[in-house]
Structures are given as C-alpha cells and as structure tokens.
Length: 121
Length: 499
Image (cartoon, rainbow over all chains, first blue to last red; front, side):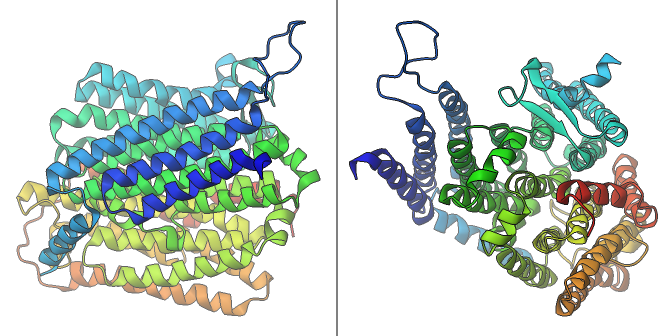
C-alpha cells in the first residue's frame, strides 16, 4: 500500500479533477478542476523518474545514483502548456462574463437556447 | 542542394516564425503578407518533401543533428507527406480568402492577431504531422489547439465564446489523456521516439500499462477527431467561428488528429496489438456507424446551413474511422483518401458559405444570413456560390465523377473483402441521408421564390479560392493518381503488404 503511495495520490488527483470538470457548472471551477487533472499527470511523469538520493546527471566520482532528467524537462514543457491553457480559459471566462453577464453554464446554455429559438422563429 | 535537405525543418519553422513577426508588425496588411508567405513556403516545402519521398523513400531528419532516439526526429513517409500537402495547401488557399472574409467578420484592429493565430495553428498541425517524437506530438497538438480556441473565439456572435470555452475544456481533457497515454508508453519503453518505441513495445505487448496507454490514446485522440459521442464541441465551434476559420479547421484539424491515430495504431502499437488484444475494431465500427447515421440524420433537421454541414462533418468522420476499423489494406486506403477528399469538399463548402455571409453583411441583412428562410432563391442572387456548394455537396454524397466517390468506392470494396454485405448497405443508406441534407440546400436555393433577384456575388478574392477547391473535388474524382496513389502507397507502407 505504502509502496504505491504516489500512484494513489496521482489517481486521486486525476479522478477528482475530472469529476470537478464534469460536475461543476461554474466556468472558473471547471478550470480549477482541469488544472488539478493536468497536475496529476505531472506527478505521473515525475515520480518514477526521481530516485531517493539521486542527483542531476553529472559525471563525477562522488555520485553514483542519478535521477532521470528527461521527464523533468518534459513536465516543464507540460506546465508551460498548462499555464497557457489556464490563461486562455480564464480570459474566455472574462469575455463570457462580459457578453452573457454570467459564468454559470446553465444560465449560458439557457441564453443560447433562447437565442436559437428566436432565430428559427 | 542544402536547402532541400532541410525541408522537413523549414516545413514547420517558416510558419512558426511568421506568427510572432505578424504580431510585431502590428499592421493587418503586413501581417497578412508575412503569414501568407509563410504558408506558401510551407506548401512549397510540402511539395518538395512529397517528391523526395517518391524518389528516395522515408526521410529522417535529426533536429540539431542529435541522433535519434535521443534527439527529436522528424520522419516523413508517404502518409506524412500526403497530410502535409493537405494541411499546407488548405492554409495557402484559405489565407488569401480570409483577407476579404474577416473584413466583414472580425474588427479591424484584431486582424493582425488573427493572422498570427492562423500561423501558429498551421505550425501546430504541420508539427503534429511531421514529428517522430511522441511528446513533440503533444506539444504541437497544444500549439494548434490553443490557437484554434482563440480563432473560434474571434467569431462575432457571443456564442462563439461559449463554443470556444467548451472546446477548450473538451480539448484539454483530450490532450491530457494523450499525455497520459504517452507517459505510460514512456514508462514502459524508456523512449519517446515513435520508431524506437515500436521496436521496444514488442516484448511487453500484453502488459497492462501498454493496453492502458492504448486506451488513453484512443479516447484522447478520438476527442480531437470528433468521433461520434465525443463530437459535442464541434457543431457550435464550426457554426460560430469566423467563416475562414471554419473552412480551415473542417479541412485540416480533425484530419490531422486522424493521422495521429493512424500513426499510433499502425506505426507504434502495430495491428496485432490494436486489433486483436482489445475489442477495439468492434467499438470503432459501432461508433463509426452511429456517427454516420445519427450525425447525418441530425444534419437534415438543422436550420442553420453552417451547422448542417458541421454535423455532416461528424458523419463523414464516421466513414474515415469505419475504414480504420476494418484493419485491411483497402479499408486503410479508403480512410486515408477520404481524409483528403472530404477535406477539400468540406473546405470548399465552408468557404462558399463564408461568401454568403460576406454578401449578406454587405447588403446589411444581419450577421448570419444562413437560416433556410434567408437562403430562399439564393441561386438567383449568387449563382456561382450555389453551384459550387452543390458540386461539393455531390462529392460529400459520393456521386461518381467526384472525389467523394473514390473514397466511398474503396470503403465498399473493403466491406466486401470482409464479406460484410450489410455494411455495404449501411454505407449506401447513410449516403442517402447525405442526399437529403444537400437536397435541403438545393430546394431552398433553387426552387423557392427569391425575395429579390439582384445579383450580388461574393468578391472575387473569395470566390476564386473556393472554386479552386470545388474544381479540385472534381479533378481528384477523375484523376486519382496523386490522392489514391499516395493513399495506396501509404497503406502498403503501414500494413506491410498488399492483401
């Protein structure tokens, strides 16, 4: 059980993030869920790459245990992507607030449906 | 020639450089010139690569001279070069078109940003196609996705914003699923290079993480492909995005995702794993059929012309994935060739619809003159536009003499190879649904009385690119050496041998 501690945390974050995205109607809360979901993937990559006591891959007689640097670099990229997604999502939420006067999904869907019915009539 | 040797890198770098340049120039004409030049240069590079692959086979380009599997490798085979041609070609046609189109749909001070985003989107799509590195696929996927969300959000209607937001949520979930899948593969194989991964995966084929990776990748990519129950983001995004954006996305974005799916299935996991260990062909067959029938059926009842063809796109994606699910030479060839044929036909239709919007905006009839009441008698006002939509519509149906026929023919051949006659009937029956929705347009435009009969065509700079694609969908129905030739070549390369 304790051996897989990090995986349990990863799965917990993943599932709860995805649940928030699906279950919440508030656009900001959805983005928070999305962020948690993405963060869980960072953990999934980083944890197997890190060895206890491991160091950066520098050839030196003092060190014999190394962590794998590649996943760290990959996740650095993924974090940047996550930040960009979050920034864009929040910007869209602001624009939606300006255009609809609400950031609740139900309300926006209601307004959209009303507009659609007005068009077809 | 040394420049030619670097064509794989230039393919991606040139549009990538054009995007920030467009932002720095801050002027819409200058931005237009730079990004269009970038797209045309990318198209030239794609043609060069296509010819080069024909001569010398697979091209492997090492970024920064770092040898794979450590460095990032760009790998161009027949399928890659074929998709590169489609993507860069569509960008080269849509960009000149968009100048007149966005004039009426996007505020002027935002034009330079539109071009910058277009350049980035093109970069992402080309990069996803050409790269031979799994994590690189994710990075380019996000470059293209993020710029796509912005492009959709530029639409005039406020519903463009909510459509863009919805796509952002769905798309990010899809992309995260893809990283998850790649992560599992990396953990199991210790490599990110697709070719290297394909070799190493053989020893651990049936281990659970590999199967989990396959499942995550399938769901994640299917979200981007808009495979039937995962298509909810698509209709609104296509309907409310600016016309030029809709045309470009419909012709390329989902197609590149299909390409990535094919790449993972056939070049990494291998047929035996994908199609034997999991009930994937059955699931895919079922979802494709549902898409072909349900989406095409929903399309018939839409009142907005753009939304009608958006649903038709979901249906057409069904044909592409149906070909994949056969796991046969002809099926794969049908998928690949339909990817191209549907791309140009749907691109043509959305470009022409953009013309209707532009002409309507000029006449002051409101921003979205696309309900069928407004379209009544349109053929008298815009004969060339309507005729173009009808021809491209025939290609969607799959009438002999159009490009759509070629792909449907191969799809039917593949179904007959399997001895599945009921599938042949299903493909024909779903084509009848396509007849129905194209007929709705014909009925409104040609047989209803017009409110006024003043001729008011779209500007020439919009008609010309659109008609280029319309003629293309006839040309590739008659001369199939480029499209079908490439598809058969690619299928043979992927599957290994002819049946």
